[in-house]
Amino acid sequence: MQGQTTLLQYEAPWPVHCLDWSKSSASGQRPRSAFRLGIASLIEGYNNRIAVVGLQDERVLVEDDYTEYPDFVMLCDTAHGYPATNLQWQPTSVHGWGQNSSSTELLAATGDALRVYEYNSDAPPTSSTYVGRQSGNSGHTLTTKTALSGQSKVQSQSLGAPLTNFSWNEKAPSLIVTSSIDTTCTVWNIETSTAITQLIAHDREVYDVAWLPGSTDIFVSVGADGSLRAFDLRSLEHSTILYETPTPKHVPLPSASPSTSARPPTSPLLRIGFNPSDSNYMSTFHMDGHDIQILDMRSPGQPVMELKAHHAPINAFAWGPTEQPLLATAGDDCQVLLWDLASFNNATQGASPRSASSRLNSPRPDAKKRIVTEPIMAYTALSQVTSLAWSPQIQGVAMHTGHSTVTGEWLAIVSGKAVKALKV
Image (tube, rainbow, N blue to C red; front, side, top):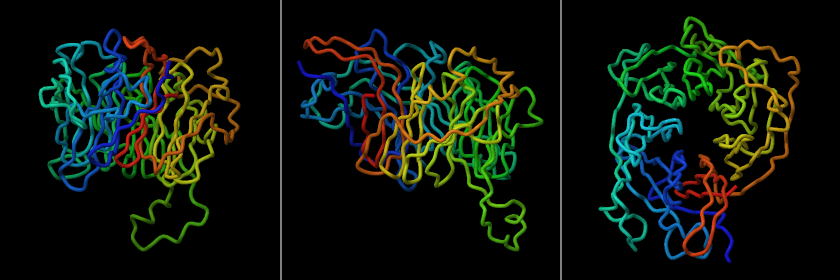
């Protein structure tokens, strides 16, 4: 009996900018419906695409030498104008919300606006030997459900400024918070297509935003001003600065222009993500930085941990879906590294989770920074890795061929046009 495949591959028709793995664990469905990715292109100009790709045939899960055609095939795609800055499937908590049937799933993307698409897989796919894309009557469709672009608080033109990122609220899936280059964050209700609130979050561009897991009120953001800030929709008159990047030691004298002399240059923070199993902990990294900073909401001001193993700037990270999640990091050094931080976070050992409201002010005495240099796994790609996405836990299945697969997670990585899914 052959072993289970550990690598699935797909070559997109264009460079891939971002991707996400469908979070519906597809219980009771064909195994291949759990292997569904949303991908977005990076093409100059206004002719970008968003596509949904899925397994061509589930036999590729158990037969490594099944190479007559690609592992993944494009199920459907749609135009997206400018490149999408982020792409996410609806949270797992969505059951029947905003949907007509179990065969539809929502997919959102940011760019010049926040767009929500409805993916429908209703009709059974026709069996086709066509390579690269299923035939037109495959029954898979991707249609625009809503497009949201608001009047900006800080700019006078009628259209909102480009959006850099977004976070979909798991507890209240009608809520999405977006970040923008115009220094603002906006909380949208995608059911009513309205902006609930827009706030000036940073002094400069905001690059990423994330809801506190389990909360519908608190979110955090990072940006070009080098700060990580927390906001609470119940008290928007002030924010909490949880971390600021250190000012460079050798700062050149400010130029004559007052806008540049007002603030010393700091290193922008590009991404922010919560540990889903212990949301006291967040990960972030600096622009051009080779290290990942792990921060603890209970001891703001400095990282509690730094992960040092990449030899070039980091491009992406992603927390895994399990109870003791691994953190995957990727960068320009062609490395994908997996980190197991559970043993370092003593808070995860038997501590009861704090309520969302108490998190911002609960003290933590033992804030001494740890340096971690040993990832538990490493994968070397052929070129720079720009994006990552974990699958949910996919149940093992016995196939009619007599083969079977093992329950577990996969990690999808992007290098140029190549998408690879690695069994972890």
